[in-house]
Length: 383
Image 1 (cartoon, rainbow, N blue to C red):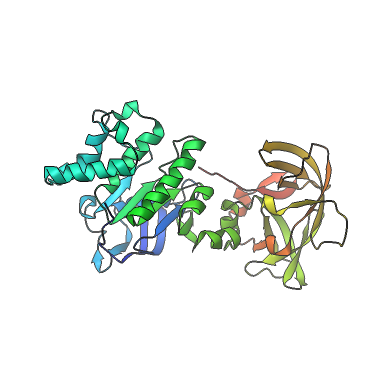
Image 2 (spheres, rainbow, N blue to C red):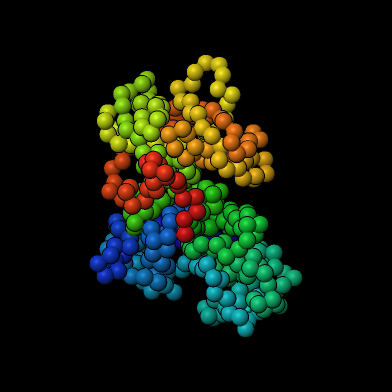
């Protein structure tokens, strides 16, 4: 079994979807090459599932168009687009065996019985469910049911596979196993995949490129490395694990960086976007980039004193919450053994501390105020 060579490029041009007076998706421009794995990423309500449903034909567009090479497909009904769909809730027929569930779409296409049998058995073997082929879905685990749903999608040899948060109902161990399985199937079958998730770790591990959405609009499109290391704005940084977001004020340039100050802090950050002196900025740093040091030796450009308040054991690392003398709460990850009450010195490299312009009125709504100190705590797994 192999993916069909039905197109070279899938193109979304100005795609939009409005519900009443609300734009759920606005002006989405995206070009997807054959064999790519694209992840649509963002918190609940950002427009990612709307985009997927527009692709699938489950929602009509209110703006823009969708093209497979030179063929416009947004005007076609779902069954004529040739796409496979894997739903969050599996959507299996409970009264049909695994084998009959997988074969259902092929039978609806009235293929020869021998062809249905061959392709069904291949698909079941691909997802390693040979021993369960005669069981009903209710007799399977969640991970096994998701494998059936994936087999049912790929058995049709679709030009494009659409996956809507397919792992969200699984426990942590199964999520890891199924992530590997999905990536293996994508590579071995040469599939083109569009995958919706709110989990940035899942997206980073699976996708060739990520599309981060917020309030129906694209914030950034790029490789996992691009978004992980070079977020385009503070919204992307917030969602990509820059858990420490601090409201500070930009000062003068310092070498290749810019001075940022406030709440008892005076640091040198890498500016992303225009941050003229005197303007408010949101300064972002990942917990793992705040390094616990002894506070000795040459003075670092960014050295912060803090007191440990909370320590969570997470295997090789500790997740630590520490607070500065002026009340700024910082999230830290460290291999050092720490305990509440410990005084620590934190260093962060200039290129790991990013300063973004506070250019959006939504900051006031999205920020949290901690003990009267302007600071924000990122959302690692928004719904």
